[in-house]
Length: 357
Image: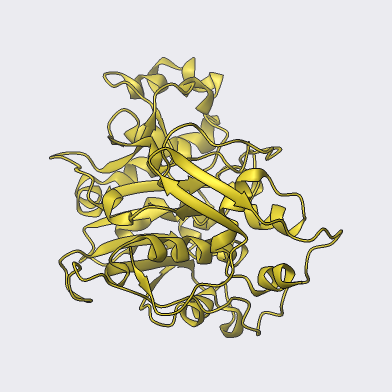
């Protein structure tokens, strides 16, 4: 595990990760009817994280050997989650200095004093992250209204354009949503074998009711539903993916996904955001990854966001997909039990002040 230069701040709970699962000892926040007021954009809203350094077995920093490329979107509304995700990755890998972070940000969205990238650099001053500007106009005409407004934001579709946005030197990347924490060495996920032809690797859920991700209009149209002919499609969550960027480029997968988005605009064949067109192109043709790498759905469903429990089995990554986000529920003093697993990675200053009180 990575070595920190100084002691980490007091945690909201103690977590032990083992093959049998996670043990939680909760230290509850003081009750209050109102959440702490947000800090003004010009103030540093996050505590500086400890500086994690490589273990003795790691390649030198900057060496292409052992490099792990991680891509995430950078959105002011999800910045608190992004900070926690980055912190968790660095804390649990033996080679934190070999993790290269790539942030996709919407061009022109931020003023200088509230730029999320500036907040990232202030919180992790020893990192050298890359920021890649994503043009929202590229997808605005292709987005169809879905069941939740957050799913309709242009940055939610930026993962489709990773291969077009990242530099040509990046040939493989781990894409992560901003509502995850990693409690295992991310190098294990990075090293998944994609074989000779697979473009994406992700946990696959073949027990899920795959038909519910598309409308009756889709399934009743023989020409459209024939898209899955010859393959056994299974649900996978696009918030955690290992992508062979070079193969994605060569295979023209961006265009393939866009073609299904165009069909959606005409015929309304699904209700969610960027997930269904990925399923249409790739479901049944991905490299399956152990389920421990996406304990998803912790944010509840997309409408109510009700509390959910952990699935049985070992856990390497926790994912608050769904409507409920842990930082919002903790601030509202209405957390779900699983939200206390996210709290130790929260670097937001107001949360630390609430704990100290």
